Amino acid sequence: MNHLLKLGDLSPAEIEEVLNLADQLKYDQKHGVDHRYLKGKTLGMIFQKSSTRTRVSFETGMYHLGGQAMFLSSRDLQIGRGEPIEDTARVLSRYLDGIMIRTFAQQEVEDLAKYGSIPIINGSTDYCHPCQVLADLMTIREHKGALQGLKLTFVGDGNNMANSLIVGGIKTGMEVAVACPKGYEPDADIMKWAAANGKFTCTDDIAAAVKDADAVYTDVWASMGQEEEKAEREKVFKSYQVNEEFMALAHKDAMVMHCLPAHRGEEITAETFEKHADEIFDEAENRLHAQKAVLVLTMGDKK
Ligand code: CP
Ligand code: NVA
Image (tube, rainbow, N blue to C red; front, top):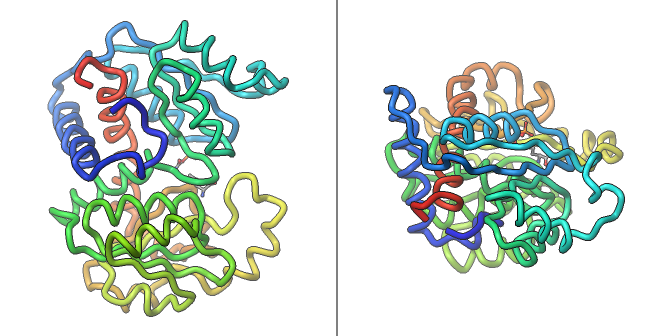
């Protein structure tokens, strides 16, 4: 694996390789077995948006693997003053062994990979969030034993999370259903690809999407960068809430998932969130393990 720019670039076998290594690294970490696969290596972490999980899990992951991570806020980098991405990519490639970037435009991530000569990892863009979904797939597999044939339902905005969940779900043999208001659908090309490559539906009927689901996923109504649309979105998404009423339509033992941060009383009720807190925080923990696997497979000698 050279980069992790989006899940669409990975084959099902590569996704499985990440998940298997993530499971192994999690097991070893819990049993006190260290792996210094990235000894002496440095990961640069460029953030153009806020982060709790992504920043802390990547930084800790690099430390566990014997390397170090460097937090690079775009406010302080020359990128913030207009230095082109193609120059930044070539300069940072001379110092670092890998870059993790969280930004707005997917094109910036693709350009870093195009002009740089080190592995690039997407820490989320407006288009997708591949690291989160690798952790999500790991968590579903951990709880359910396998992914093939399960039904994964996403309720809410057709945003970066929806896009990556569709791709990750279809590539691992799950049925994927999305419930979102009209006009807020996931990426049109991704939906077309999903319909041609697996079992996929997109509807504004939440009950139909949630029916018989094995995992019900939701995310905020307004993503980072959409703060000005917040009031309008609160009206549009009002009924797109994961709650006990809708969960009654899913499988009896269905999981509830959230990438976090969560807004209780908006996309999920406090009651449903707390009922499924173990799953949701396993999911958050698995960011660390899944990303350690990605770091090893892109930056390590295992690649
Ligand atoms: N889920 C996620 O990516 O969280 P952060 O925004 O805190 O990194
Ligand atoms: N859709 C959210 C995900 C945060 C992890 C956002 O982009 O803000």
